[in-house]
Image 1: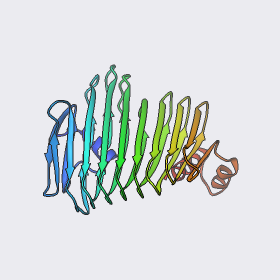
Image 2: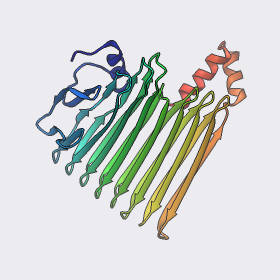
Image 3: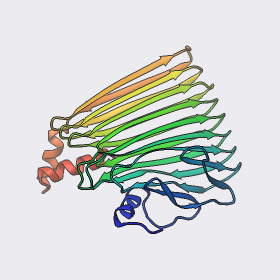
Image 4: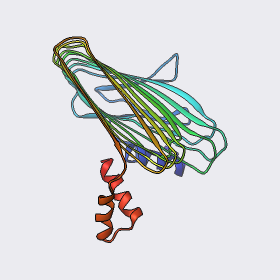
Length: 307
């Protein structure tokens, strides 16, 4: 692939490398695919009526990966991409996504990614999505991801959602329907600074008997940035659901958490936890006694908190 240095940096940040990976992949740069590959067990097909992909994982596929990173380096580009994942039965697959924007101009660059996962019986998926923004331009770096997950009996999905830095505005929406004995696990990590805004919302329906969901969000809000976290878990059957929001607030930032639990049956066990506060002074003092400056101490605490 013929990539600019900025595009290489984006792929390094969101997927760990800019080399062509083994297995199935689709690399997207400035609204176009620059490399696509299918395997014996995984088909990566472009949609015909709108921008995006249909990705088909065959029954009993084990240990394979799909890489679908996106890079935007053209100021003013605005796109919406629809990717549908059709996971067969008894499969295990890791999907590495993510999007980065390099903006050196005065117009906003926007990526709206809509990912839908249809996960077959007893299958397991791990989905890793990272967002990143940088560049000297005054135009915004805007990322709005929507994730929909539909889990059949015995299926499980682990979602690792991370906003690294540099994203001026994001609205993340996650919707899930969880079937019998199926499991959903979400880990969100988020950092905002300057006057950035970030909104995360989760709508989870525990429809199946013995279904479970666990949503854990950790975030840092610095400077004048604003964050909003919303989580709604509906227990429609015998189930267990848990959500937690843990945030550190600094400077003049603000964080707003809105939990909602909706039990439709006496056999639904639903729990929510939320904690918002500043960095403890004794933590900073302890690190400073070991030789760190105040800024270095805060950085160490933040990095440890977001792990």
